[in-house]
Length: 565
Image (cartoon, rainbow, N blue to C red):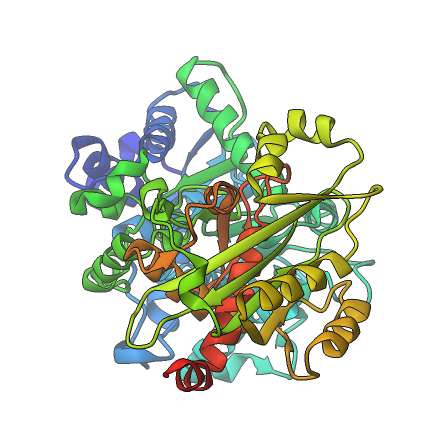
């Protein structure tokens, strides 16, 4: 017979919820305000005789005991050793499985949202919970799914469960691991993604939704939740770091958590069915305070090395573009996809140069051919022998139609820039790419500067490439693939050169304006690609500059030898 106990009848040392709450409220363990409010609410509710739920010591310990007795680490220094849960993990499991509705005897919590930074063992914990739900949760014909947008992501938790089974003779004896499913009696555990052929007919008992922030399709989440309707006590376990994609299901669930906490603050009555357990910083500046790191990293110096985190913070000091990824993935501060590339001071360079000093030189080039709304930009890249400074000469084009309206919308002095010679207006409502070719030929005729290679994006460039080959040579146009593999390292190098004031762009006001508009998107491998801070801004001059920089780096020895006279 299941014995249900209120907090008042459970020994202190036997209730991880109580123990953990005491440590985070006292400050012995640093925790964010959201986490402290949630645990305080649970503890206060258990102390209230009118509360709709109570604590089952037996059910909580059954789940915790399964994980620690049968689940093992599959890799690293702990490979093959039992999974020893930390207090924060025990408290989480105790909430999920030990909070019982007084009237029905069923679990109180239907959905748990664990927001925790990278490398804190969330997938490992989820894998163990999935196996418990598969084997010992008492759900007949259990259907357990590890769910993500992509199948590769969905298989991470599932694969870890397979490895746990292989490391445990007791689990291995009782389960059967197939190519894409784990079977236990009449129950099954499978990975599932939006790429699956059919999502119909599911009868989900447990759903591990991995990396919620990457789930842009709310339909997949809704299908899973709806498919739990026929189960008496389903488990939905959302695990995620913070993401950069806004207004997806992640933000919807995050707002749900904020609304729940608001009800707690306002002392409103509600039925606790959704449990948000958030490990995040309260303020951005806390990432510089080592004592606050544990707020987002409860497994700090256990599964996550403090020295590695410190190294990531040191990188940000030299590479500002990595800050968004750091704050998002290591401290769970929600970010937009774009992050700042460089500071204003790093981009600004008031130095000028006389183009005459490069008479009879070979130059690199870069172009960015626009649609009707963006600028079209072209530039020359020049370098003197035995010097480190790179010199850029830009020209920009806009259609003459609606130029007054464009000036108001973009809030920049296009008309003045035309008078100053930085910008040329083209007849009609779009730029003719031939105007770029004409400009390069003008430079050659006026200054004897010969174009050796010119980087370009293939989009909309076919006719222009043929024209450039006819005007110069067939080798002059050089395609630059617009992706992280091609652009990331050159963009980082260009950023370093800008910081060191080794990029002289002639104090061109349009180029500087474009530089101030550049943000970057950072992927999980810390590769970067440029993007606009917002869609109304222009970065075309930087795109042309980056293309020129790529072809220069690709051909630097040729450039230097030809100009070493």
